[in-house]
Length: 193
Length: 193
DNA sequence: GTCTATAGGTGGATAGAC
DNA sequence: GTCTATCCACCTATAGAC
Image (tube, rainbow over all chains, first blue to last red; front, side, top):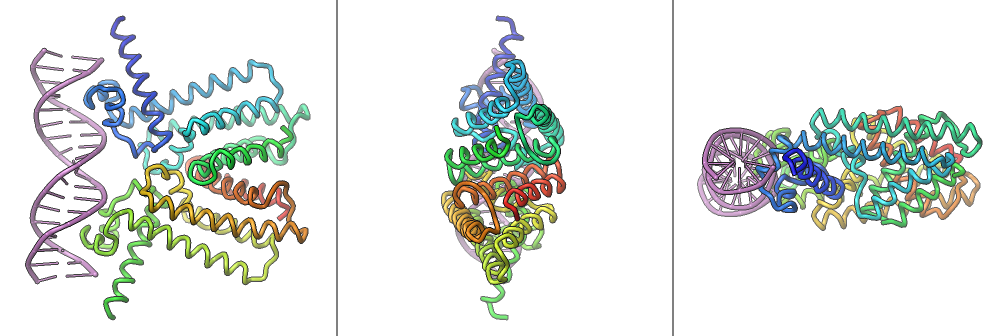
């Protein structure tokens, strides 16, 4: 149990708790005190791991990004067809919402204007990577005749994420899971997936 | 210049400034001090018009609601066909985004969990009324053969608002006006509008 | 790595003079 | 209706002991 391991472990716990808080309340609506209470350490202790809240925020986005990329790589490795890949992608969102959370980066997108520059940049990279993966799958799927849609795959990718994030956001306040499910069914049907 | 007129005038100015702040920063991210500075009055003076921030928030939503309803009623009175009505509806969002704002209620939906109960209720009424109008137009349009879509008109209405809000939100942080325009073009094309 | 203690700032809100 | 003055809660962040 050397210090590195311990530090890493605590950092991970902090990120875990903070992420849930962002997904449910938003980045500006939670405080170090909230994390401290949940983790039963003091406020000051958190600043050892993440000196400023901006550092914590960047850490959150980069970890979220890394995890999603791993998930997407897993979907790629599964050898599934394009249609199934899209369905798996949508399932990621569905699972998050079922856990009463908002997509973290969707929440941060709403708060974008108030976020520290480094967080804005990290968020930009996240959406960039996501769109790239989606566009690739869409392009491949259309070529093979598994999917159908008009316009460029890049544009369709952005439309998809926008609609998913929006449906998710409104489902949380008005419409619930049923609203989100209806939206995803429509999107998938539209694509022929 | 009696007091009533003056009061109303100041209240309106407060609401005007506050609304812009909500649309750009969010409800939790602005303070009475921001409004006071912009209006060049003191912080305390604002509390005369809106005792608590929750009061201000409810006032914002109800005014926003009233205004949108008037706009929708205007569209109804125009005698336009269903397709043109939908296009006019979409144009409302487009104009807001062009002014570098987010739809106020979309922003509030993202912050929903952190809002005072009275604001949540007001927001609920807003989305309810909006969906009702949209569903009515969609239903009418489909009957007359001006619009085409699968599923119920109520469900399609919720899908539309969700996609518009989501596209708007992501356009503000990643993709800009082009992204939003692409989304609306796709949605309208899908409807045959 | 975590603690106590505290600084320095900002938030919403109220009392009471004018 | 607007002002000054003030309260109190909470926020992020730091210094320094352990």
